[in-house]
Length: 177
Image (cartoon, rainbow, N blue to C red; front, side):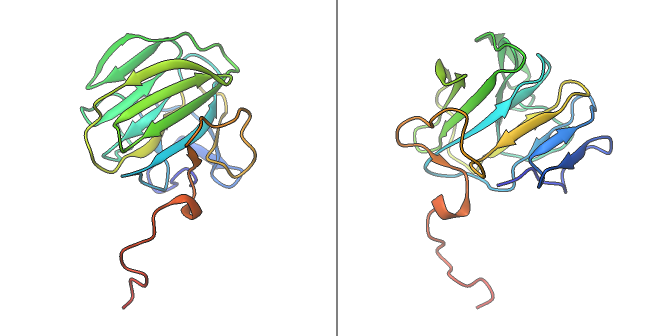
């Protein structure tokens, strides 16, 4: 997975193989290129400041930030968001490596602060296909790691890097046929 350059704000710039973003457009988000409908996957984001949000969303829409819609879930430096409502969650410091562990089979989303669980932020996430989603809260750089390089902290037991090698076998082996 990488950040999808086709769903991005005009002022956002992607670099490093679409794993780093700079630029700030309020209420705009970047989405991962691989959707998750089953399994347990993990990725990391380095938080530059308290305006960055990371999570999952079922409907990739560059004009929404994570947690704005009923089918998106996200956290920032101290709160968790869903359906445009927020509540207190955990305080992430600037520079923290925030791990995101999404269990699509059980509908849970748990975050990690420099390798330590911050607790399950969301439960009962409905079945569907969800994409990793990120919002840069300022003009600083945001880096994501879906497993292209070693994670800063070990993924939780049973969770895999988000890459095609860890996805289920497709039901149609060759789409051109």
